[in-house]
Amino acid sequence: MNDDRHDPPLHLLSSVFGHPRFRGAQEEIVTHVAGGGDALVLMPTGGGKSLCYQLPALLRDGTALVVSPLIALMQDQVAALTQLGVRAAFLNSTLDGQQVNTVERALREGRLDLLYVAPERLMMPRMLQLLDEARIALFAIDEAHCVSQWGHDFRPEYLQLSVLHERFPAVPRIALTATADPQTRAEIITRLKLDDARVFVSSFDRPNIRYTIVDKQDARAQLLRFIREDHPNEAGIVYCLSRKKVDETAAWLATQGVRALPYHAGMDSATRAAHQARFQREEGIVVVATIAFGMGIDKPDVRFVAHLDLPKSIEGYYQETGRAGRDGDPADAWMAYGLADVVQQRRMIDMSEGGEAFKRVLFTKLEALLGLAESAGCRRVRLLDYFGEASSACGNCDNCLEPPQTWDATEAARKALSAIYRTGQRFGAVHLIDVLRGRSTQRTTQWNHNQLGVFGVGADIDEAGWRNVFRQLVAMGYARPDYEFGALQLTGQSRAVLKGEVSVHMRRVATRKAKAEKPRRATVTAGGAPPDAALLEKLRDWRYVEAQSQSVPAFVIFHDATLAGIAAANPKTLADLAGISGIGAKKLERYGAAILELLHG
Ligand code: ADP
Ligand code: ZN
Image 1: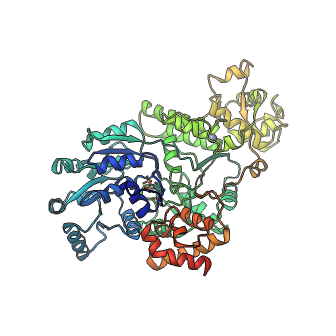
Image 2: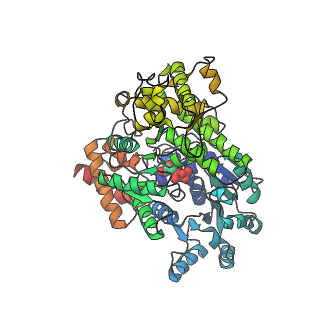
Image 3: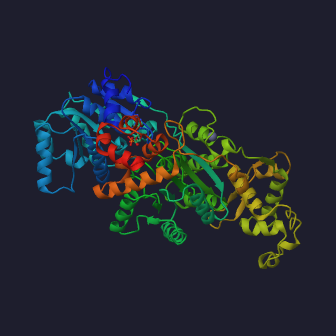
């Protein structure tokens, strides 16, 4: 152990939480709040927000009150803290009267370091009176963006939380959120009366997430290959647009041996809750879901988030993909994207309720996302740029790992656009491709399209190649889908291409072969050595049994990264074991002997 005795925050970090060092601004935040200051903390999911109030809670006298909107999460958080030897409890509607009394007594008698409460409970007169009788170390307001009336997670009870400041002006407050945009930030400050709070903004980069956007061909088969090859038996989320597609995809994956469960708002709430609980507690469950599956998922070891449909905006994409890899281990954000997605999203916007100005905003957001999907440059640079953060090529996205080849598609674009024009701007890509490739079908005959000059001029490009051309034409604004029927039409920009005034460069479709050559990711451990696979398997089995017997999620016992660290270091003594990140004093005492026995017994 290093000489951290003179540095109480660092000492607690390593002795209680088992982490050798702080991440990013954690230390500054902890010191500021422990010293009595107010703080607003903006950190991405997985950035390590919890420690920002958990450590001050241990450093200050009295009990820290944590306001958290999600009952299911409180239990896991409290279970995890209890494992570390921290005195934590929660008060919510799942407790019976006697349990409530026990917790309240512990609070009054100063026997709690942290108490988690739901916002509606906190505002009850009985609770406020209880707080008067207790000694409060600080207030932590988690998911603080819930005060935002325009946000997607609005919780009216959050608006009343400013009462805390009026009633307990001397108690420091720390509000935390992963929502980055400036409006929400301003709203949090006004509504919670945090004008004097120091604002800590972290980088929103999630360096352990690898972004990949593939050309959609046979989406299901592509997804299955991705899961089988890159994430067998690992936990993940698959997002689909519609409930029907969720049900179908989950059922199909299950027939293919993937432990997949559906989740959407159309299911009865008991089944939904059961599926979420299994995802949270069991290992290797894949949830196929609509965006209804979101808030409340606090699983650190989600190894991938896959999109089978295009989200509506970069904000949505970033929030959804952000649920992967909270534990900092390598994780994948994978999306399959094709022409039909663009057509579908545009149509949904066009048919949505709302005025022209509103639709324009939605179109602009969609355009930004299409720009990301079609980009030949670093995905991360584009994402961060969208959130106002400058960065350089990341080396951990598909485009960085395998720079896409571009080709001069001017000629192909002209052929495609003239096919649209000559057939009267009334057909979708499938028929246009038949015409270009010179396939005689019922429709080409019926409409005499086999008589056209463009019939068969594109036989040199295969069907997938043409689909790609049409998609990129739409994404670049050279063609657009008719909202009602999905027919492709020309735009104001098409003319310049048809007349040969501009040249068009497109991404080439990445082939699967190229993908196989990409460097395989290895589980990263602190020491850098790869973990021994057999040991890791043994440790996982042990953790599973341990978690079952205590009925807590596996990650509450040890995170994946900690198991990987153990398997890599193969410690011989308790002292060796103590040096591994994630093993604090309490866990060493509790599990150290069992682990050594498992490894060497
Ligand atoms: P957030 O609430 O910001 O999404 P958490 O507080 O849940 O993130 O932390 C995410 C993960 O990072 C957890 O697994 C936590 O144990 C880990 N973590 C946080 N701080 C550190 C640190 N200083 N060193 C190592 N791991 C950390
Ligand atoms: Zn990159």
